[in-house]
Amino acid sequence: MSGSRWQDWLSFKRWLRSERPRRTKPAPAKAQLQLESLEERTVPSAAPLDLTTAGASGSINGAIFAQTPTQPTGSGVIHSFVRLQAQGAKQTVQQGYNTDNRPLQFDENKSPTFTRSLKLDELPKVDAGGVFYRVFLLDINQKSSQPLLSLDELRLYVGGAPNLSGYDASAHTLGGLAPVYDLDAGGVDNWVKLDARLTHGSGSGDMLLYVPDSLFTGTDPYVSLYSKFGVNLAGNGGFEEWAPAAGPNSSSGASQLPSSSGVIQGTVTVNGVPQVGVQIFLDANHDGVLDGDEVFTYTDQNGNYSFNDLATNFGQYSAYAVTAVPPTDTTTNQSSQTVQLTTTVQTATVNFSFTTTPATNPQTT
Image 1: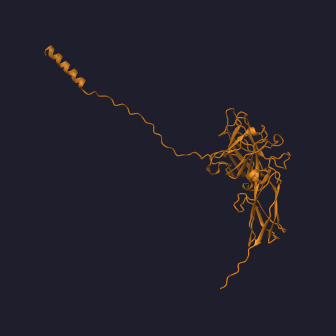
Image 2: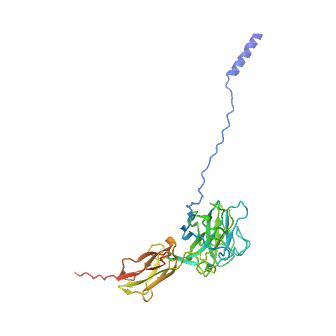
Image 3: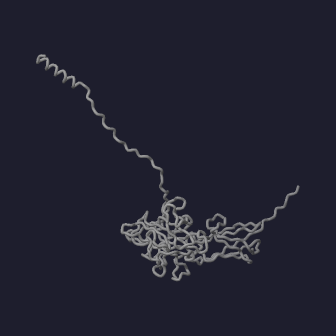
């Protein structure tokens, strides 16, 4: 092959190579993250019960939480049954319960002076609105620059032993016992908002807890209280402690409870005649029915009745719906009357006057 033809052949091959489709490697497929929707497992959260105003109060699951005005507590007045203080400067959540058992499980103070068993009869009993309650005192401690603290969990247990142990955070049991009171009963995440600025430091008392007496069954049982603080609003200023509220008959002489000097009294008559054995009750939920935790009595041979040692000056919880069960075959215009007891109105008289129902004469034809 001549030189010119050889050059023509090389040129043709170069042209053919340039026109041939180039093979390119396909780009690797980009990995895509796919998020699978997970089953909703959060517990419904309720708005907090706000006790950051002096004298504020509210009810959760039948218990009353009340900000308490400054009262003389401190050494010799407050007799704590559990003191909680987390170890370490960065620990902002504190939890624990009272018991005689050792070792302790959570953040409880080890001294038996501050963490101990509690008998029911140590807790004062008051009548508020027609229901008997046992009353606990809470004392919190926070920095003045960050005074807010949350009470996030609260459960009460009743048993026959002073040394319960083994709190189960999943089952909410203590020593195998179910709580008789649970702040989060019904699956709602309730919590209480507290403000340490409303009182004056350690030992002054910040909140009163009123728990229906009907929950505490048995003859003077032991009461165990589990609580947790600092989940919603962090703890920062030392210990929190629970104690029986100091009642009017406290050895310290300083009551932390509303005045219990209230009296409601009256007479029941039928056609103007005093009636014996008529049932009178304080209808706390205003449903017209005597419930198991509501206070009741009967008229004496003179038709008289009375309720004594009632809480006064306690807002809505000092309003009493006095209700009479009408005697058989009688009628009245008003079988329930509501009275408000205050520091100035501590005694109220509520009378009930019934008349017999006229007999209907059968019609003849």
